[in-house]
Length: 326
Image 1 (tube, rainbow, N blue to C red):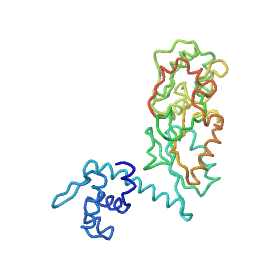
Image 2: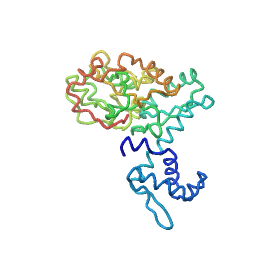
Image 3: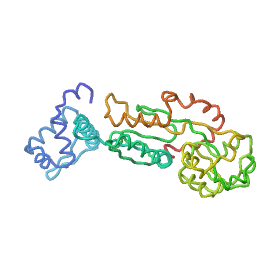
Image 4: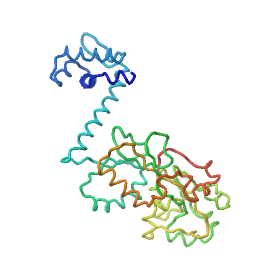
């Protein structure tokens, strides 16, 4: 369908098509829209002629969508949902929930510990959270997405968040046994397998041979941090994600000042490019960027962040780039 045909399609035809496709019945759609079944059938036929596609398979007992009709129905329903959200947005009497999707470990380790402050400042904003390693679907479910690792190419806005440092972290008791980097060979090493940079890269950056054995492996940073807090070993983790444990002394950096940390942009804020957004969207985005102090990097690529590129060096080949992860 070209742009000229799209402009000529009457919106009532689209609404009738959606009802008929959703219900798989011209009669049910007719009752829903207060029309006759013949009027529904006529409108669908006219729509098919205008777009040059057969949208329904018809028999004496039933109608069902063709492959093309099913694809079109999905996009039409997304459009209707967006129209409904637009009307709700401009109605001052109804608050629009802000729907946030985030990488799991970022949610548990960094976001949730700070959420109380945001709620106190903005008690009238309705927040809805979801965490997974998948990318968010903005058309259907979410307004904002915080992803781990470089997002896949898309037309959406992409803002690199804080530069994160990766350092060996452990409990204070275990730290008493670690005075020099070579002491790590005698300790259980905890590895997060979805992390962009692994122990191998850290050892090589510090001109040491990587060990051949690791104590524990996890697929979530939050689990790896919890294991280190419980004294199960030394974890190579983001000091941003482990900030709460470091601040209260549950974790320490036993080799701070005598080894080189890996630094990189670990998380990105992604959202659709829209001219108008509801107020809670802008409020949360400002709060998030302020808390992370990322103004300097808001428009920069990961390579432009200080030291990130140089510290990566040859470690890119060791990165376990496994999608949004985290």
